[in-house]
Amino acid sequence: MDGDLLQVREEGFKVGWFRPAGAMLEIIGQRLDAEAPALESDIPCCYPTRFQATGIYFPSEGCWEVNAKAEDEELSFVVWVEPKITSPQLTLQHFIVGIFLFFRLRERSEWRHFEDRVQTKML
Image (cartoon, rainbow, N blue to C red; front, top):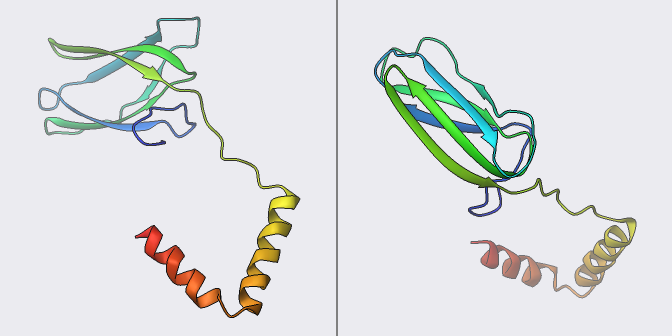
């Protein structure tokens, strides 16, 4: 995820729930703003406590309603899911420019100074 955005991702999202101890949890969901396959959930068996770990998979971006039920307890919420954002592809030109800069800095004995500045910015 990028910051606070909820984005479509193949591995889904881990979501923890609290429900009546040992109760079966059911999670369903549907997209509200367009046609889409139903939300998928993975609910592992046999958590004896109130806590239940799950996986939720949004098949597409958009406005989703999620409904959970355990015994006579219910919870519903609506969430906006952003489209999947792929990282930019590095081109051969980016690679060549990167190598050129690396060797130019090294030749000038500035590499150590440059490395220190990068590490400081990363902290």
